[in-house]
Length: 177
Image (cartoon, rainbow, N blue to C red; front, side, top):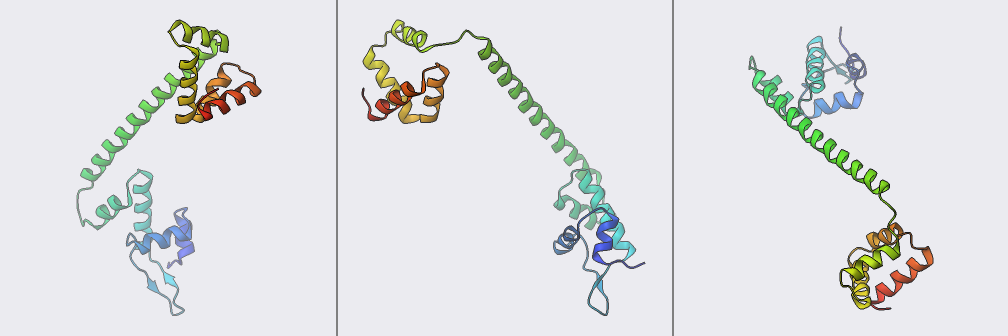
């Protein structure tokens, strides 16, 4: 039974625009036209669209699908094996991302468990490391110049009150106290 584009799309749970796109890129052959110039798809077109959907559901690219459909009697196994390997590599990359995020989460949990670092503790560490008042001012100035948002976050991390943060950032932006 002949199908119009909407009926064909529904048989494969696709949108009408997807079917028209597949036709425009040559995955589906241009169909016959009715006397009223409407597209008329055959059972063969429906089967080809089902095959396209099967390959898409398997994660194949449209280019791979085209080569499989256009290779008359060709062996699909080489394309499928290559795509299988690509998907495996993608899964491995995602696992690496997952592990990196887990490490970051562990790090944030450790920061939350750490004793609170205050402005006073930070200043004493800087002084113990040999920083003078002028050195600390230069440090703030460079931090503000190169990474203003991070400078703000760092000052907030030290639990410095907002008015004092504003003052520190203002003199840091000017380059002196």
